[in-house]
Length: 128
Image 1 (cartoon, rainbow, N blue to C red):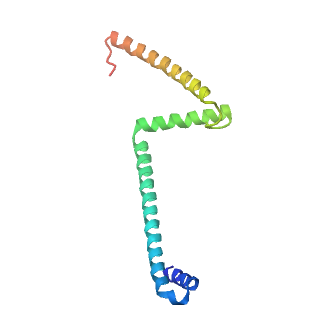
Image 2 (image 1 turned 120 degrees about the vertical axis):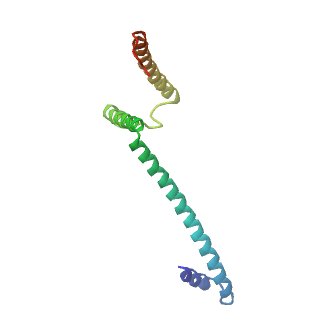
Image 3 (image 1 turned 45 degrees about the vertical axis):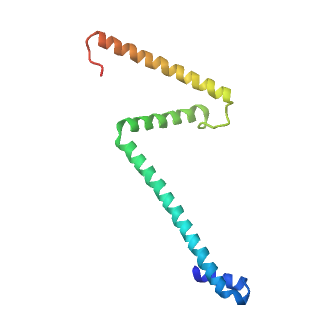
């Protein structure tokens, strides 16, 4: 590749600047490969992090269950709405309302769980 760049630059520059073309070709080739290696290294680091996160999810029961819930909710949304969440399908106010409704449901579920735990504790059962 270096030789091809040297030849190309030599052809483009005046005949009396061939020495300069070689130096320019070497400079640009070095920069190109340095940037290429840095880019590839960055991509490898990102991929390694993704693999580590995937392995952590697979080996952690809690994360696996959360991932399973996300998958089921995504499937449910596709069945119900024919698509996944899109940024532009609701206004900002509609997104806020939707989130408030979801959190209200969560509060009901947590309150029911809390009451159940309180009853268990009142009956002398260990809840930890």
